[in-house]
Length: 331
Image (tube, rainbow, N blue to C red; front, side, top):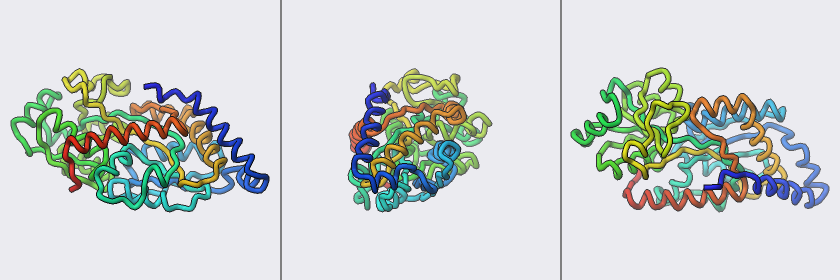
C-alpha cells in the first residue's frame, strides 16, 4: 500500500494553512502564533499503555520545539470510547487534540451505541506510529519454549489459558479472536480498562497471555518478565529479530498492527490543525523520538489529512469484517 507516502499530503497541509489565512485578518492573526498556550491531548487509556508509550515522548518533543506544553489527559474506560467521546465534545478552539488508535476503528462494530461518531465528530490530522502486534506470555504461567509448543498445549487444553486485553472491542481483544479463528483454538478473554493494567497483570501472573502492541511490551520482553512467541505480519521486527513472524509460522493472514493517530474536534480552526500537523510531524522526526520509536519496533507512517482519512476508512472496513466473522461480543 502506498498510503505511507506523504508528499501529496504535505501540499494539502500547506493549502489548509493558506485557506485559513484567507478567511480574514482577525481570525488569522488570532491563530498565527499557535500555540499561544498549553495544548491538551486526550489519551483514552490509562497511563502505562501503548498509547502513552508514544504520547508522552511526543509531548516532550512538542514542548521542546514549540515552547508550549502538550498536556496528556488520560481518560480511560470502555475500550477507549469514553475518552473519544470526551474529545468529540470538546470545544473546537484548536487547543484540544485526541490521540486515538486502531481500537477506534473497531468500536463502531462492537458497541450497540456510541455517544460520538469517529468520522462525523473528529478530524484526522496525522498517523504517528504503527506497531505490529505481538503474542506474549508470562513464562511462569505458560511453559512453552516456542510457538509450536504453545499451540500444541492450547489445542490439548481448550479454555485452560486466558488472555488480557485493553478492553472489549480493542485491537488486543480482536487480535485474540482472530487468532482463535485461524488456529481453531479457544482461550478465555479477560478485559481490562486499558493495556497498561492488563500488561501489569500479565507480568504479575494474574493472566496467562496477551496480544499486545510491541511498543508497550518491548521493555518487558527485553527484561524477561514476559516472553514473545510471535510477531504479527510478514516480517520479523528489527527490534526483536529472534521472534518469528506469523507468516513463517503458518498464519499468513494474521496481520494485526496497533497504530496511533491524532485527531482534533471537528470544526477546529484550519490553521491550528495545519500547525498541529507540522509541529507533531517535526516532533516525531527528532532524533530523540526516532530512538523511542525504534526501541519499540514502531515506524512513523507520516500519513496526514486525506491520506490518514483514507487509511481510517480502510481500517473500518477491515475490522467490520473481522468482528462479523468472529462473532465477538463485549464481555
